Amino acid sequence: MTAMNPQLDIRMGTLAPASLGASYIRQIVGHGFESFSLTFGPGDHGFDFARLAKELKPILDESGARISSLGVYGNPLGDEAHDEHLRQIMRTAIDKAHLFGADIVAGFAGRVRGKSIPDSIPAFKKVFGKYARQAESRGVRIAFENCPMGGNWHTGDWNIAHNPGAWELMFDAVPSAALGLEWEPCHQMCQLIDPLPQLRKWAGRIFHLHGKDATIRWDVVRAHGIQSSVPFAFHRTPGFGDSNWSDIISDLRMAGFRGSIDIEGWHDPVYRGELEMTGQAHGLNYLKRCRGGDFIANPK
Image 1 (cartoon, rainbow, N blue to C red):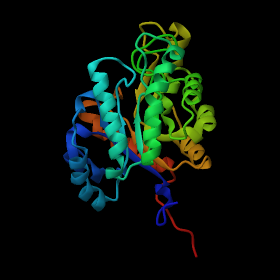
Image 2 (spheres, rainbow, N blue to C red; image 1 turned 135 degrees about the vertical axis):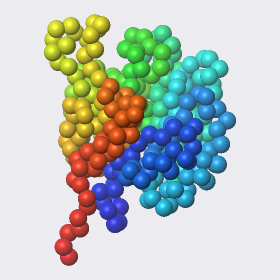
Image 3 (cartoon, rainbow, N blue to C red; image 1 turned 120 degrees about the vertical axis):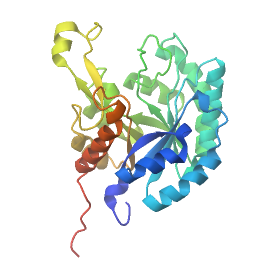
Image 4 (cartoon, rainbow, N blue to C red; image 1 turned 45 degrees about the vertical axis):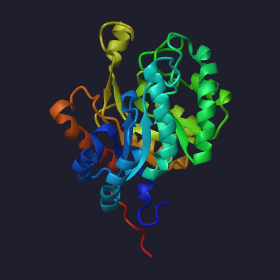
């Protein structure tokens, strides 16, 4: 537990594109973000990790915020040039995470494009067997985001790690304690999965959370199903969706989770554009209230 403030065993933060550099974090850290997940994509090939870590250090030292994770998003199982760029970034992120004081590299598990989840497992084993060994040697954990990216069990372009059946296959194929999940309720809710029982079952494999919720329009589901032209679900910033994050955080605490919930913005249908940071700041303060508010020490 954190010596001075055990509330910070679970920090509340946000995602920050690494391409925006330290200036972006410098502008928003004063809103009260306690952690930042730095995000990378295939276009960040050749990124200067050491330089960014050096530029961030005085900002983090002054604010007390931390870098929770490095997120590398793309298809590491693909066979195109930008997929190889992504794999190079992931290898570098695993090797350089310590420069940021982080021990988590997150991202998609990838997918053999157009193939089923089981048909993608051999490629997953080949790629992430190597990454798991590299991560173990560096004291790093790899966390797979649970986003379908438009795919399903039978086909898709990006990510197999969106379903508990897939998680079973993945962790059986590469039985490493360095592999786990970057979980959020939103993606499960949008598959009509009840997130809380899943959280309780898989909490031991959850290394990092995205702070993203969902609103399910059950009247649309009942009238149109989930494959019509009528949207039945919306991604939401925490505090605007259907989830009770007090329950989520309580279950995380009871499972012994230590880490960060970092808001994944830029998805809310209302709090976007000019209202983006307004929504994120509301979500941040909401999550802190769900964590229990300000820490108050017990009397001696």
